[in-house]
Image (cartoon, rainbow, N blue to C red; front, side, top):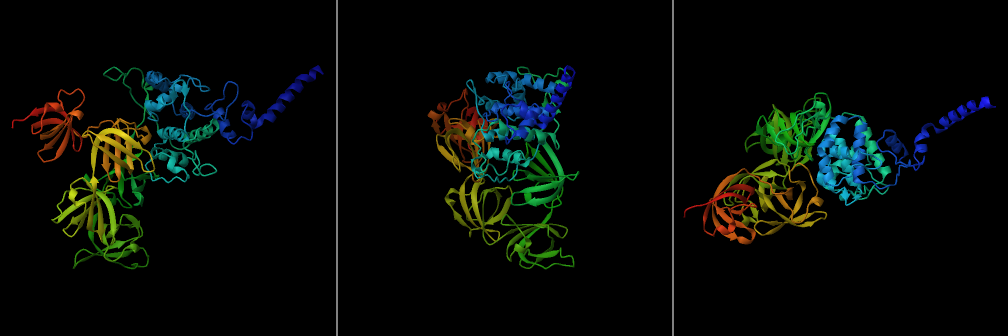
Length: 638
């Protein structure tokens, strides 16, 4: 019997191994059952040492997750995917260690040990988080729980450090509670949907639940998706960079290149040929030299053609194009060829010419006695009143502009018998005269028309000056009505009210003592003080100074802090009013334009030193269209 015991023990051990099989994870983790909905993802996270168990062997799938854990787990997924160098991360951690200690971040986080500082250093270096955001992670001695939407943004930003995908798209989320997702977070939610990391339909009720907390099981599913995405497809390589030591005037270059932290390019150019266009969203799809197709939204891009200014409508199918992309947003477009154009009234579209049923002919009356003809094909782009359409939708007398190459129409822009749009005047005009004007539409294209005495004017007492926001009504492309809406301008002031609702508004106390309230346009951008990070309305605080650009639809850009918008210059002006309580001067310049003159903190000049009627030569900087900040004042002889 004694001789058989070793054999029996061996057989028992072999049987145990066979019985355990693929259930090793559930045996090792004390609180994740074999039927748990996230068992597979939790198992992979443990196997890959991304989300470990606690010391007692428990995973705690129902434990509420903190913001700190989300970033640490995301960092470990990046490291597990082999995308980070330990030496470089050591340098990065040293770079940010003092800052992290200053805001009270703990160096150890159970069960992640000492990965907290490396994770946050990585996040700071690649602008996944700011130090101000990290401060919110800690509330006294408590680490704050994370909202689902914030966890999504952190994971998506981590993913896009390596994917560098274009996030500037028209996005329609299917969630029933999509309106509760902040505008700045929508693109990141969509990125995780596109990478199959989160569901596009939400929970059983169709909700995303952006403001709910999440548990470790849910985080495991999301981090597992992040890890899988990083392990597959193309990733951007992180390039070596140099750092400057705080308190010194020169960058240090000690050590080898491997010792230096990594840096990622935030601006790039892409080249290709246009293969598809969506005029409704101003999106183009291009094919590059390797055959890969990419789409870019161009509503914020500046257009140029061989050094001259262009518009979106100069782009057609087949255009060779170069797009400048900064932080995922298309900021510039360069074309190699400008098309010719004819303008007139649509007369008719012929039937198909030849046997291929591909070519037709458009007849355009360019004058009372002359017509022009151009070929029209299935891929000829047509917009009517700014909306994508078909050549079949054109009707007699529609105003048309036909862009063509040789005799082939590439694009047709048409205006029907009734069309209204908002825009900003490029030129001032007088009501009693006939004047050509340009009106820049919200999408950046310029409508050229003629103002005649027959035009109906609304709110004309305000005058029509360059920079005014107007509503124009067209009849067959001719201006028949102009309504003054307001003035496009930049203002600086302190936030006195924040009204968060479906269409949010903020109130701003201006330097002249007046309070004005503005809504936000559909394309509003909110930026931090340096202008390099997007924020949300929830980041604004009362009494905070902001620089606000007012345009079509309300606020088009808000930046925290006071932003100088012009280089130092000078004006000669007459003092109209001295406002001692606000330390400002109201002056009239030589163009009879009213200006507000402000004095920076610590200035040797004060408003109380001057009187109404004085003529001053004021050197300073333009803070806004009508606000001037003093550098030096010289009183002129009268």
